Length: 180
Image (cartoon, rainbow, N blue to C red; front, side):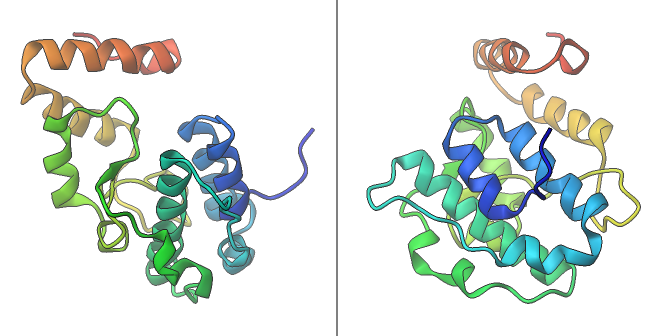
């Protein structure tokens, strides 16, 4: 059984070693909003360890974690750790947090991503840390996220929408499936 608290640094390591976004970031969300509310600053402070020759995904996850540290620090009246302000954690090209995102999905993310992520060229939506925990100041919940996903999918060409739904359903539990 795991006994360590999920810091952003641990989240980065897990994302880079193949853990799913839902699990790695979900564990961090649980730590930040439930298990370690009084230790939130410590969850952000531990710097991530990016390899000397990172892959594109490792650079993307580093930029995501730096954006998360800045965003959460501002939103929850914490200090943004110095490591998160390192320009090395900014990307030259836009990078979407969902691997199978299609070009049609980029535009909404470019509009809704919080500034801390946009500055780093990380595309995500403004509900990235949505959850139902009482200590959260985040908007939305799972139903809201699914509704927004369906709104975006409704704007896609049928082939692109069907391909996305197949890929999405292949990686999530049955209760989260989207029907075409």
